[in-house]
Each structure stands twice: as structure tokens, then as C-alpha cells.
Amino acid sequence: MSYRVAVVGATGAVGREMLKTLAERNFPVKEVAAIASGRSAGAQVSFGDRQTLTVQSLEQFDFAGWDIGLFSPGASVSAVHAPRAAEAGCLVIDNTSHFRMEPDVPLVVPEVNPQALTRIRRGIVANPNCSTIQMVVALKPLHDRFTVRRVVVATYQSVSGAGKEGMDELWAESRATFVNDPIKPEQFTKQIAFNVIPHIDRFMDDGSTKEEWKMAVETRKILDPEIKVIATCVRVPVFIGHAEAVHVEFARPVSVGEARAVLRDAPGVTVLDEREDGGYVTPLESQGEDATFVSRIRKDPTVEHGLAFWCVSDNLRKGAALNAVQIAETMVAQGLLARRAA
Image (cartoon, rainbow, N blue to C red; front, side, top):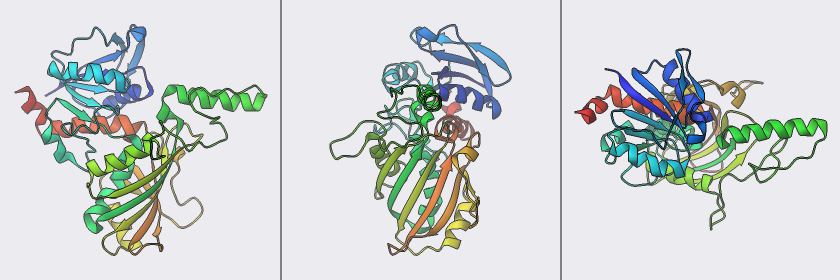
């Protein structure tokens, strides 16, 4: 069986990656539509090496007869058009933050909680935040074995998390630094080139940023409502690839060897953990890869059952496009799309 798939936000960094990922993984498509705002209508985007698609206007697009909508157009746009697509019978897999914490919308990472896909009520499935996805992929097998109680995480998030405009700003500021041109930040609150910024999304009343809040509440919704999480989210001058320093407290004793063995057997995880120069994965090396990479596994002696590790993933792939496509693949494999159509 093959499916009609509409990619919404097709001209953005994640939308282009969704089209690329669908083609690379040979998702069973009957037809693909590239959708974006009216100002992008008529532009051309690639669907892998197969064909070039002409972008259609989201405002005028009729979702009737389309099986799957992969959405990444921005939260305010999804708020309007994702329900419209779902009402037309199109299953929406939404990459924005708008629906993630709504109780009747599953928040899914296929390696972690695929069972949530049986509880779709509104025709919408939410893709978690990119930094949450890679962390819960690594935490899931450890939680199943040793029970995670508390997580302290510091992120090192690339500028592609802020879209094409963020990547353009890093490039422009880097060039300006070398030629001594003036720098005026627009996408970020401070200069990002040759700098780090401990601020992603808006500030909340308790002093956390919205990005830090997302990591906590999304982890609890996906993995276990009893897990305590505190995050410090930092933007770094890297184009693609998020990294995280994760410190975990468990309910049961855990050794480094046990943790390494559990992670090596876990779906979606690749362990590269050598205690030598270069024996770890960096964001640059994660680019274009599907896996969540885990390195620097070691005991945390500051808590009774503690472990620390380094976690890296391509935020445009596993952190966004790939996870959305994997949700669709999981629904196909479980026969859930066919059931919806029936």
C-alpha cells in the first residue's frame, strides 16, 4: 500500500530534510506535495533525487484525500492548519511546539513510546522538541533497567534549531568578524559567532527558558511523569547537531559496564565511548546520521546511583524530520494508517 504525503513547511530547513528523508528511506509514497506559505508558492524543492516539486500555497491547499501531513511551518501556522488537515482525514504529524502538551495529542518518539500511537483522538501526533528527542532515546533503555529518578542536563544546541535564518546569521557574523564589519544580532539576543548564549526561547516566571521547560515536561510525558528534570539550554556556534551533557540519578545501582551494554543494544543508539583522544562523537560527526550517539559514559560520584554521559544527534534529522517519518513508518508497520482509512 502506498500513501499520499503532504510536507508542510517544505521550503524550510526541516521541511527540506523531511522530503530528503522520505526519499532516502523509500517511504511508500503514491504522491508527494510540497506545501508552504503563499509567498513561497511556485518555488521548486527537491524530493530526493527522484523529482522536483513545485511548492503549493498552504492557504489554498485541500487536504481531502491526503493520507499523511508532515508539518513544520511554525507553531502559529500549525495551530490553524493542522486541525483543518485532520478534519479532512489527513493524519498530521506536527513538528512544532503547539500541540505537544495537549493531553489528547500523543507526543511520540518511536524507539521510546510507540504504544502512544494507538491513542490518537484528534488526527494529530506531535513530534517532541529536538533536544528532548535525543535525550529520551538514550534514557529509555536505562530507565527500563535501572529507573531514572532525576536528570540534570546542559545542552549545546546548534543554530539550525532556529531555522535557516539562524544558520544565515552565524555565517554572516563569522564573515563580519574576519573582515571587521559591524555585527548586529537579529535572530539571537547576542552575537552567536565565536560565542555561546545561555538563552533559547523566551524567559518564564521561574527564570527558566521555554526550551528548558520543554525538556522537563516533554520527558515526563514521553517517558515517565515521576522523572525530575532540570535543563540549561545553550545556543552554540555550530551549524548542525545538538550535544548534551547528561547527569542521571537512578533508583537502582548501575555500573558503567552495565550502562554501556544496555545502550549498545538499544534501538536508535550508537555507543562510541573510548577513553582516549577522539574517542567520542561531536556534533560535526553526527551530521547526516540517523543515530543518537552516546559517549563519555562514567560514574557520577555525587549521588548514590549516578551516571554521566555525552549525547549527540543531528537535530534536523533525528531531532525533527527523521522522527516524524519514523512515526509514519511505525503507523504503517502497525497497520494504524490502514485502520484510520477504513
